[in-house]
Image 1 (tube, one colour):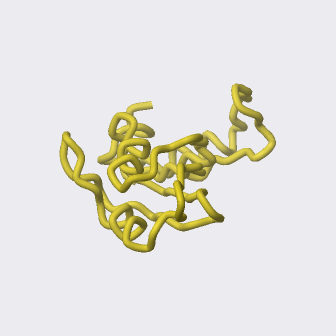
Image 2 (tube, helix red, strand yellow; image 1 turned 135 degrees about the vertical axis):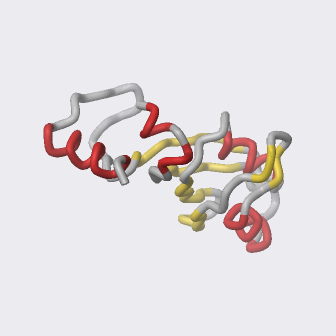
Length: 119
């Protein structure tokens, strides 16, 4: 668990983020700021992979995991989060799971996850 959650191991976490857009969609300059790190009260975030999926919907890939990081980053650029869904942790993703559902990992998935955090 420590290797999966601690930023020093660099495991990617991917999210689909629905944000408030007001009268305009998320600007290119806001996405630029998100990609290059945003200054928060506990320090600047590491650069994130951010792409616009559709109006008001962003895809984030981060390597660190500060408390409520994506929510705070989006708030800092003027687009509070409406809904946040983690879609992947490292190599593990399961699009069939609904919110609140869970399943046991297969032996192959456990092996992949271990390999991804033991550099």
